[in-house]
Image (cartoon, rainbow over all chains, first blue to last red; front, side, top):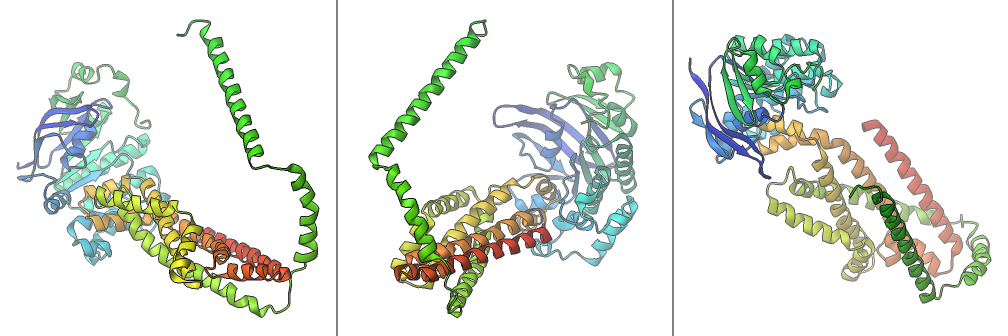
Length: 259
Length: 264
């Protein structure tokens, strides 16, 4: 096993004084499927966004594939980001563009800035994007506009866009929090199978403990910006779950349809 | 604070405040009327004169020599088209540089915002009058005034539309390693298109209306003919020009409405 990601002492204080993360240490090995659980406001989202520098951490180092992530060097940040796929709660598609274009956006990080601006995607990329869409069951939606799709379909486009990057790591921020139970199952299966098959390490934020237990090879529990649990699903006792969700118990079984 | 008397006391205060405001307003109105020596009788007795003027002198519109109107109408349309195209192109560049989410640097944003709001706060007619002084009476100062005003108006409204776009798509593309240019092209522009079309068509309508006013300060367009006709007491011609203007504006509004329905 090789180390994909190493986080040391990650701290984030938002302007205004909110301390979102207080010294998180975390190592992700290749092929791991890690669920990050915790109540809302615990800092799960900030943790994920600090990894690819969508949020600028206050302190700590993040090493991805042996290179330190830093916002100083725009070129190297772009190169590292292109190898990290991201999946969002609200899908974050470009609604007025086609499904195919949205998936192809996953290649932008690998293209020269100018080629990207003029949408000069290679034929191989276009074919790969269509293949991905067929694989996730969206063969008939390829040329539709993204805003014509249902939530579950949009999320599968989001997954395809992330996979299109041929990433080493996928960050999924509450991927099923806005979906009904049936779509949630499809989306989680799609993420899980693709990551396993292609050996992509995955960090997925969830607030449903059951889902985390079902898929994760390892579970991280976050409470008030601190890591309070790190172990397998079997090691996650009910006691520990209550500790993690202390004061926000109603959230741990939050049904998948809610959010 | 929240004892039983608190509510009525609060209520009484509010009432007193409202009465005070009304009294002040009434005083201001009374003072203004006295100050400008407003005479209601003069106004009322003027109404028959006004009606006589409209029906005896102004109407009917002078339909003879219709050819003489073609040129000014064409001028007006062409100025509006050229003005809209150029101000849209330049306004777009400025908008991207000054919108919070696309500006390359906060300083660029601040400087541009300052310039744009200064230019916009000088009324359009003042610009036209100044430009007439600089470039002389004619069509050019009119076009320049349309451009100065149009560029700044569009830059501002475009920038506001860009700032209102949802940040989600931009966030996703940033996360996948897209560069600044790629972000603008693939995340911002597709979402901005409806706003862009809408405001640009609106600008075209404004430009048509503006050309009627521009003539009054000698800056070309169909307004020049209107002013000329009025100055020569050719009221029949003047009313014909007004009729043409109304038809022109309605036609343009109809056209832009159709285009909107088509593309949005």
